Length: 112
Length: 118
Image (cartoon, rainbow over all chains, first blue to last red; front, side, top):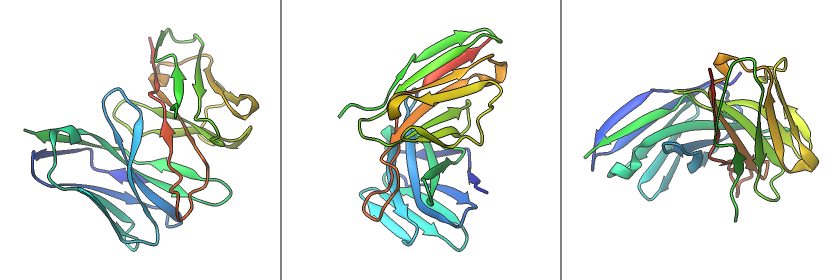
């Protein structure tokens, strides 16, 4: 079955790096995603990684995937106050249709 | 490009009453999802449509929740009768469907419908 877990809360100082971690259980996932949710808004895709990759860099964002340990992380370099939000890890399981399961979410608080 | 539209944004009802939420997905998106997000938790999939048909409703409480997708476009989610534990944000999302090596199967979300059951 699918279960995606994250730590609930992370607090960092502006300018520092943030690392948000996620563990998942379904080894057949095809894509893993990071979505961002700002207060009162829906989720928005931040970045993603295909399951046959182990790293992806996109400007200030670095995604690391360890398939052996089923561990995904998101590193945000030079964290800004505008990065304060809830970050959700999600996995996509292919097959006849695409099923996307979300984690519990990590609330990132950036202190000025 | 217009995004996913949902209404109403907010709804307050008493327990045992009924409520309906509406979603208009992005034009051309074959897959439509309804997620329930309880405060402090991640979104939980209630039902997933591929065009007109239901492909996953394993977590939908079918004794009180129902959903339909009209002509493979708009969708409504109904709760009857509502319980206190149904208080949540109901998120609608749509996608093109399968992810491929060049397209990650991104889900596009609406702003959600916040339900409070008293």
